[in-house]
Image (cartoon, rainbow, N blue to C red; front, side, top):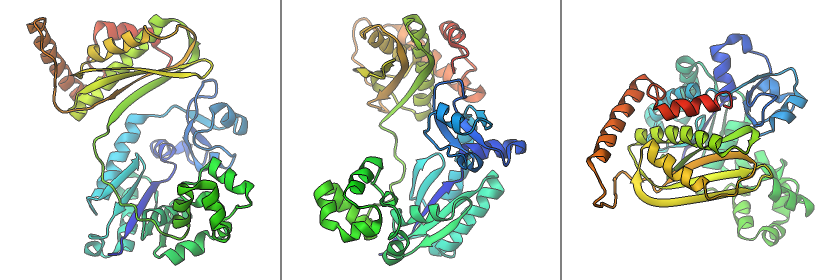
Length: 392
């Protein structure tokens, strides 16, 4: 059975949310990410900023060099997540086969449902219309016979566009004279390898199939298939993540390990809240550190299933004590081995105090759910927050 896939991509999502909430920003080069005097990168930017060559993942210093008169803002993730939830609600009315790529992008398999709504064309147009009416934002929509064709279709008329690529022949006609980078799986390094062999466009791929295989092996075979319009990937609905994490890049290198412990405590608090929301425990806590020379190391410990802030922090702190003490640029925690069952090794040292802490933790979580995750703070968390204030 032929598939019908829709790809939806919100237009400059973070920046668009900020413009929606503050119309005075409309038409101005808006850069969301770090501020010009900080370390960090561009999360996203408005189309006006892109005219200056600013793009996602670019260092903020380079962005400022290219666009010194731009408006620079920190991201407001809570606001973006709320907008994303409203967008996802629209998508889910047309199919339960939705693969969320990020907050602002996803694939919908409407093979079995499109006819019920008047066809894929109408579904795509309704998604665009409802996104404007209910969320106040625009999106670009592509309809295709595969995931690759749908994604290329959504990119064809951005922003606020709509396009269809319904057959392999239509896809090949569209991409033949474009850069090899248009093919899924060809990144900067792969493109450089192909370019050195004189393979610059997709037409060159067609003319040099054996060279592509010689240069790239099995990966080259996948690229040839995609260039021919063959993409058998399935839209995979969301499943629970295998791990979650959070990290913090400091504006200045840190040598004070007490300060690092404060940062880890606040990170542990945020991650504890997240896994409480997911209704899971973690069995593995990992510490990630990047030194000032960009050397990265990780340390981890696996044990009982835990979820409380103090439990996560205790392990992260102990791991921090095992690493070399020199200037640190980034520190973070990740949790894996996620499970819905709280499995622990029992011992004679287990006391009623543990049960009491669990009950208090459950009450605190309910209050945070109702009034915000920062509604309840321990004394240590308040002290840590005060010490690191101004770093975020």
